[in-house]
Image (cartoon, rainbow, N blue to C red):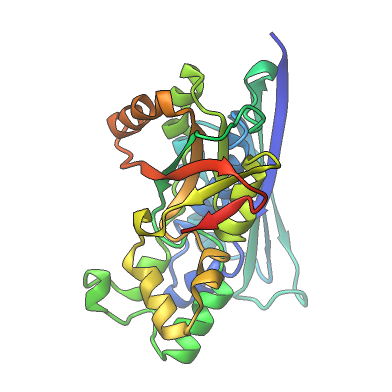
Length: 291
């Protein structure tokens, strides 16, 4: 009745460097789509369409085909139309084997159903939706900690990572949460959503919490994958910096009333998402508190 267009744009940062190191380019496009559509989904919007932009030093059709195949996969996952894109060959700006990738998504939401956090009150419950790993931010720190300081390579196999190659673990695509969130939006139970990207918990969760309220998170409740513990150990990264840079295993947070929390968790688990309670909303001026 009152459609509102909601848009988002993003890239994948220096995760592209890892893709180049591994010579694997068929998933990085999923990351690009995910970073855009997850942002608009955090406001209750359904993605409509996506466009990509690739800048490169030299047009390598085989490589770009891999990149765009990932973009197409991401659009299928998010049910967004891939309606176009642009490839710019820029010698002198990029080396022949270098490229950059960015994207732009537009979605739509009913004005009355936009999720803006305004209805959040003390006593509400904060739920975490698991990430698939590092996703697509913090990779400058990842590369410094694991490659420069620890001396690992993308082919290093570590028992704590389940015997997988480090490069493959790092290139795990960002999870797309569009379909996961859809039934919750339809049920009208979601009061606030935060997409945990660059800035981690401390910079993203406050966007979904009104002034005068604080998301009190139980650190012991956070289900942190081994890759983050490895980063902390090898990079000598403080706990605060970890939670201020990475998603720590939580790709999205949602806020629901205490009375609908069990229903929301059941709905998420029915869709295959192992969501769990991270904490609650309390009165306070910090916006985020790790306890």
